[in-house]
Image 1 (cartoon, rainbow, N blue to C red):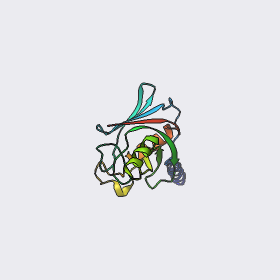
Image 2 (image 1 turned 30 degrees about the vertical axis):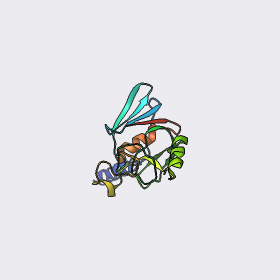
Image 3 (image 1 turned 90 degrees about the vertical axis):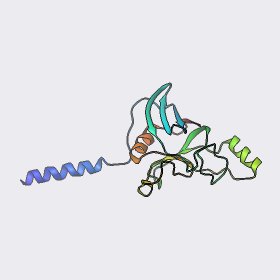
Length: 163
């Protein structure tokens, strides 16, 4: 009986060790991320092949391209994954290089700040019951999906965001 209890304890300890939010990925390289806002879909691509597809949440005002800080829109255009935040308040996050030079020039012409801090991130508990489009302009997935994405996507990966 004592051996069974020890074995169960060991198995529970091993299971707890495997619950890390950091995963390993050894598959094909993600060469591009495609986001289709109207469809609320994101694809991790290897060349022309979709490796993974995800349903996404967007900014609370999802129609149109982000033009200014606080507009609640998710940017549209060509960007790169430019940073990682393993300690994000949104579980894990990958930074998107918004604003680019065109975004900054347009905002300057309007006399406004283009904003920034646009990420692909998870969905913490306090936002689990929020509407589908709840972010300030980011791209949101489940925490479990974010763990997978965080492992698969490298800094420098291009991301294209379409209407």
